[in-house]
Length: 150
Length: 150
Length: 150
Image 1 (cartoon, rainbow over the protein chains, first blue to last red):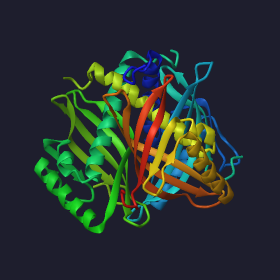
Image 2: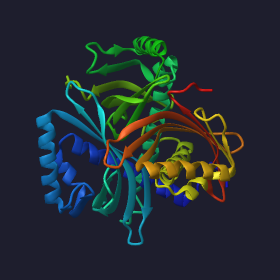
Image 3: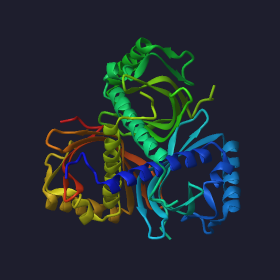
Image 4: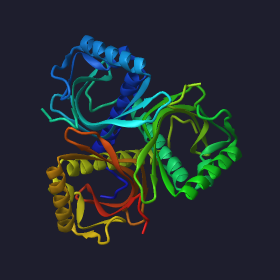
């Protein structure tokens, strides 16, 4: 098989892979820019956000919105710009049509007038579903690399 | 709509999204490798480079070339290897056929024999146009995260 | 040529570009997660791994496996989680059907209970081939930015 001709299945996956890349770029920028309603809107109504840094998950879009609002308030107070980079994306399809997406994450923080720094390195596992044509996160699990997995 | 079948429009966008990714990889590597003529050639003849770190924009390919030549001279003197990472790409089409592309940027600097470090975190907004089939930057606006936006 | 219609060749390249992105995500995660047999399996049987940090290349899958096993043992001992980010990918086709892929690399290290840090910045040049439909690395050359090229 010549390298120049990936199979047709691959071509379809290619569009999907790119769609997930694009989704994450929009999603994480909305969080970093403090557009917390847009951020919460990238989760399903019953979406869950778990992190090994938090004893309790955020369950439901309203809880995810409250969490982001509070986190954003602190960053504004501290005059810190955060940037969430997701990268090294792997996507696989589940039998029910949902997607599992694995990424690495860097959180970079820059205080106004100060020095940019790498705050955290994480890995992330998402369950993505499509509603009305748009991808949404139904379940996110974030693992900070500095903390035990569970 | 099954996840495995993004709409046809999406498939076309997929090729475009990938093209922009590839363009940035070539563009930023040319800067980092000191190929300043190649770098300047990724802007239109009347291309503009603005940054919230600089009071005056670089206007026109010749000015962009001079700016890069001077910056590169200093890096060679200091024996520092810089790497510009662009990521978290978002692309949208404008009515006139041009593209607006938003990215995050990390600038990593490594002195010869020394320690790699994150020098700057930025966000970047480009206006891209196609000339003779190739993408070019007509306008770039870089915002360092540590400085006021304007 | 409208921006919305990249040429058909581009569309094929798009699938290939995405395939390489996906390949690297899987490959580097297998290394970072300590799945050293999977890692070694992403090289051809006669694959070669060269780095300007090492006087001798690792030649052959068995040597690559031994190298990764030893490196992983040390990381487990030190309780350090490493993350290899490859980015800024450029891909070109060679006349014999193989691919040359250039990337930037960040190696991020996080000690358990400690602070994430950028350990190394590198650039990377791979020769990729397809065997039984899968991409494999036949030759990898890594250049640490802090060390002389040769």
